[in-house]
Length: 109
Image (cartoon, rainbow, N blue to C red; front, side, top):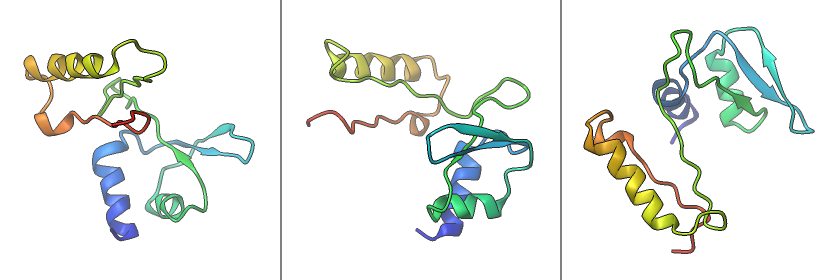
């Protein structure tokens, strides 16, 4: 995927507020930048030059996405927990089916 496509993806599906953003310093601290989150800033982010954080809530207190972080070491039955959360998200038709994703990087299978 090209850098421009990555930026388009971020703008369309992740970034919900573009009037401000954060930049992570070398010590891990995020500092708010009270300037627009531009395509140039995002290109630097996808190139690995800087680490940018985008605010999830927009000015109307709405989000484009949300995350449940289910750590297998902290939850007794992570698979069942994940299934019940996905079911709850889909059964009331609050979210399109393709908007609900499961990421299992710390799960062995």
